[in-house]
Length: 517
Picture (cartoon, rainbow, N blue to C red):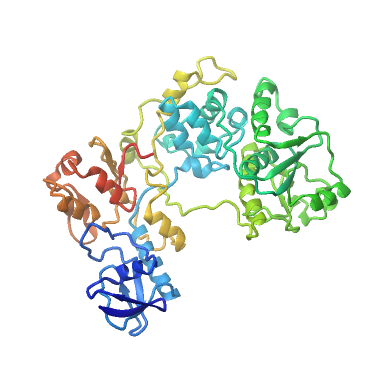
């Protein structure tokens, strides 16, 4: 047995144990991409670097054996910088979208690709549940949104964008509202001033988190400009009323016909734990409520929406005039994160956003690759025309045009998680044009996207361990090396027994189960 220190904690371990294993025994997590518990290890990703204080050297903890008297540190700035550089070098060759460009372009950051896949599978209720995680008024916005998401759609480069707004409208109209799951009440009360799209969204998402909401509006009915400024032919009142009812059914208390003046505002600040200002009008609001402002609107932090009064958050048109209702709805969702953080005694930071790898515009050579997960044909339009929406058959057909550009490993890609943690810059070491994406689909259960591969070798070692006849191997040399099935055999022959195990072991989305998302 030998003794050493890791982060000033002493540990006694068996001789021959790696520094990483020793750290794990102390409950210290060292980031890694090429490590796999089943396999003999070799250094590849260089993410697991630590520092030996006794020598001042940086060491790869996965392969260096612990020695008597070592004084290891895992969390110094020099170590973090080394890890960040390792990630940036890996990212320089990594090609792929984490989030689909449509989701990035959506002001509410809605998971559009998953909505599409569920519609394509005929799972309309599940699709609505996904939509309402980010957009509380899908049937409304599906009728009036100018669809910035469609402008960013990769399918637009191939032929025409997916009809995302009509699909959103379809699930809003056809899907059954998600069941309201009771949550433990926080005991906190928040006043939301203004029952337009921004205020309705804020009220909904806060109420679902156990905060009791009182929603004030100067009009007798909720809806704001959605009710007063949009033609009934475009947005029927029954559609608006149905979606507002679903919001109020969460337990939100609506108080219509309440014009909030300066005196009442001060009373609300006393009676409530926080206030969300979403009144939709800029004029006089700043003076009336004594908040910092410019001629364009109230000044609020761009991430948290917190104003000069820490108890007051501002969203929607009180910040600046805009006719984009989806932006107001998105801000209503985002401000709920900030208000909850404030109520929990934390510094409000808004909705968390993870690192996001971007491909950019597709090139012609990639069209056929992406169409492997889609169908041929230009976008569908409702047969009835005018202001009508999709039939079920039309919605399914249109949803199938989605190219599945988001990553299947978006929620558990270790490269993404660590790149976010260390604030890695994907472009730092970019020296050439990106590689064209390819999708090997000729396997019953997995997809292989080689451009997402970081050459960690886990798949190679797993297929060798489990004695696949062909398996995976390194092809080529030096900077041109790639991982693939030897002898140009099909993917199906390379992974006959280990497909699921290899997909689970891949630290990125390079090898993924087809039905994983």
